[in-house]
Length: 397
Image 1 (cartoon, rainbow, N blue to C red):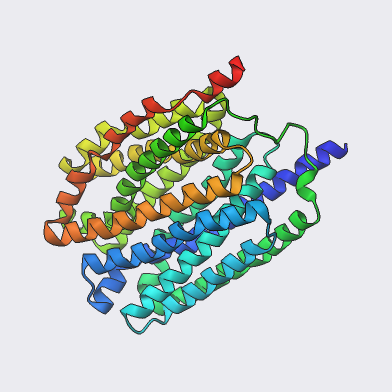
Image 2: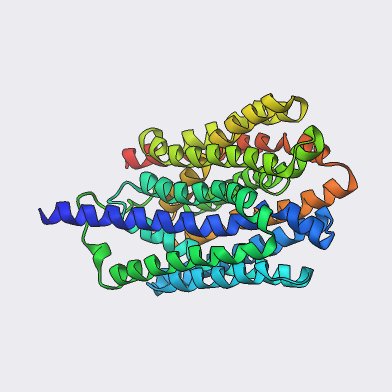
């Protein structure tokens, strides 16, 4: 009975941290969703829009590995609530920003909040996993992906009609997350994470030499580069692409962005359980390289086919991240916070650099040319062949 209650409590914790991930990423996703509003209000170029994303993602990228490394050594139960507080202030600053430098400051606060939130939240998800690390990571990622997909819809129906200052209402979303995160901090501080042991929560050490670990990490970083550079072309510029190529109004383009992000959320959830069942490497193969035919076709088709291809791309490509994170955690057991911070940081960094670089490329050429160039990025998935088969080596050991 006690074990069943502990397992139920752990599931509640896992659901709560996933819900907070939803609220966090929903709030952050509002910024790129209102880029058309900011572009016209402040007369911004694509390069300046890319710089906003670079500040947001760059700060999160640089700080997340450091936060994860620190919390591996000294867990901070209430750091999640502190991080969400930074997100709250960032949203308020963006809502009332009078000029471009203040927009950058608001984006920086969002990046700071994300850098504090993600590593420790990922650790909390693993602690509550009961050993099903892929499933737990996928559920955690599902919250974030679903939150990101809701952002454009809320921007279309709430922010666009009311203007930039209506962003301030979303401070209430961050405040709700802070309340939940304080309760999760109490659970963590009081040792609730030690209770569920129905399945072992200790990851067996991977039978891989240190040199192979370094090579595998480098390959995983390259795969993250491929995935998030491509995703940057969607999250930052898909609205402009649809508006420019198909003459769509802003609200309609944002709905199509929501469709893509909803498909990405579904793919995020699929990747973890499939990786638990068939192996992480299989998921990485299919997710990165398997999306290539669809990305190559997307720049050359009409609107219905563009929407359909975007759904397939979002579904397939997004399934990789949970598998990559858990694969890396199994490569480096006992370094959950550092590994989570590293890969969330790399993901944020690549997204930021990608947004800035692609914005400059769009200014120099065209938004259509950006999508033609990005269509080849999944070829980097061929590097998956260099990853060691952890499951097979562990079985032999």
